[in-house]
Amino acid sequence: MSCRTFTDFIWRVKEQVLKRAVIQKPLCCVQQNQTSRGISLRSKLCYAVGGVPYQMTTAAIAVSLQIFLLDVVQMEAFYVSLILLLSRAWDAVTDPLIGYLVSRSSWTPIGKLPPWLVLSAPFAVLSYVLLWFVPHASMSAALTVLWFLAVTCLFETLMSCFHVPYLSLNMFMGGTKRERDSATAYRMSVEMVAMLVASVIQGQVVAVYNIEKQKNCEELDQAQAAAQSTSSSPTSLQGTKRAFLTSALVIGAMFFLCSLIIFLGVKEQRSPDSPGVKMQMPFLTSMKLLLRFVPYHRLVLGFTITSLAYHISLGNFALFCSHAAGLGPYFQHLLLVLLGSATIAVPIWQVVLLKIGKKSTFFIGIALFIPAVMLVACCPGNLTVFIMMCVVMGFSVATVFLLPWSMLPDVVDEFTMTNPDCTDMEPLFFSCYAFCNKLSGGVAAGVSTMTLQFVGYKSGACNHSDEVVTALLVLFSAVPITLLLLGMLAFLFYPIDERQSSQSPEQIATIDSKGLSSSSDQRAEEILCGAVTGTAPASSDKIQKNERNEATGKFSRGKCAVHRHSADDNENDISETHTDPFPLEPNLKFKVSWV
Image 1 (tube, rainbow, N blue to C red):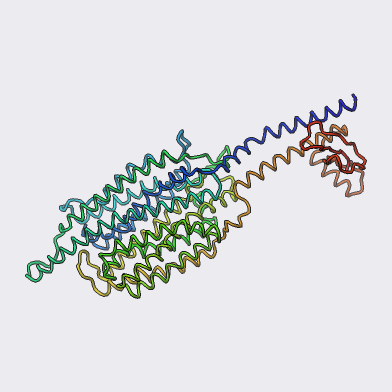
Image 2: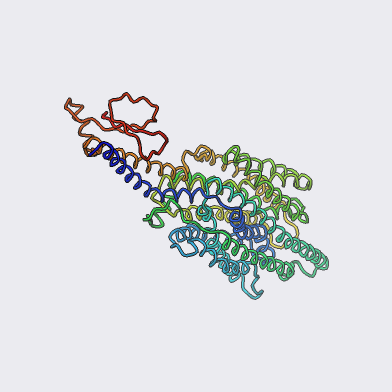
């Protein structure tokens, strides 16, 4: 065999090895391309619209349900707090359980998450409308309580079936972490607009309630003066009942329309880092693994405490304006100012967090709420001060809507890198997170109504005692301030800094592809050494044995090495030099030598 023929044989062997490496690369490269593919503006907007149903129904319930049950249904405050607390306790079971069921769902032709959205939406709309339906007056008080408890639990269950898959969809839209954060910012902006619209709708309802109640109080005063009656009729708010039911129908129609938009406008993508064989864990094991993950439970703790503070303060906003500040007729305008400033603040905070980080932005945002409620509590009847502080409070509210939900994908990515064998855990992450948000709302409403019951709040009363006014001041300002300070303390121990994150999933895919290429090149060099020297490539155990022999002074064969260099490099080494017939780089040569 001539030298040229032998050289051609060597390079044919090398070419075969490199081709095998190329065949093994496409899967990784395709995954990397899928991960790096951007999220279109249309997908971001359609995804953002999907958050409208939850925020509109939540805002309507937070603003009006307490007044509806206390003054329209004429239910005692104890039973109102019982309904709210039991419904949140029911959520404690359904939210994580639905998240686990979603994670175990099979892939369908339309994806894994969209079937949950399209099937749960119609029934959620129906249950929401029933929530604002007043049963017949002949129904007993006990049956009325059971009716509203059953309907509330049904609505919470169906809302979880819709909202948990929707939140999880953020992790399956493709794109990079920064693009997913951008999609979250779009969602929060649209959700703030949705809350604004819901507040306008419920504000009109509350305006009808205030007008009708004022009329009834005037009639009651005239009746008391004539010594004919000492109480108002339980059927005296018929116009308010119709207003509540009409608003429920409008919000229900918007719920159904938005569910269609997200179903048709967002395409779910398979997770690029999911292995072929998935580790399916029992529910309790998954929950235990989730709760033991330190970044997650610290984020949840801080989020729950701060969310509880905002729910207590804003949940009593209507009662505070009506009975403590004496600004009931201006309630709708104050609420619009608060939510309008929050809507404007969301894109501003998104820019700020890109500059200074999410954790620092969150501290600045929630700190604004403390002086604002303090000033309002000090001079509650001053309309000008109240309006100015509503603007500041709106900027603070925007942070608790945007930042915690923007931090959660960072925690999910960190968990995925720490536990690569645990797949499809995203719905469980988001469901437990959503449960904590709902739990804080339920606890806030329950604590508020129990406090009002304790100080002597009377349903349908035209005037209230000083104890009730003091309780509303404490619930609106002192309690939220204390909770916000505790929440800030909890967030001090949140360990993830997204700006210093060393490896994102996209970087890991790049590293894996580079590692595969490196190992393939190494194998090619081993075969090349064997072809040149006439010896087979040594295995790892043989190399280790030779190293041990060398340590004891015995003779061992040296290791073969392939050195690549350009044509103008020094070639004085004692080795064979060959020109690459298929060079990967111009003028590339290699040298085979013993080392």
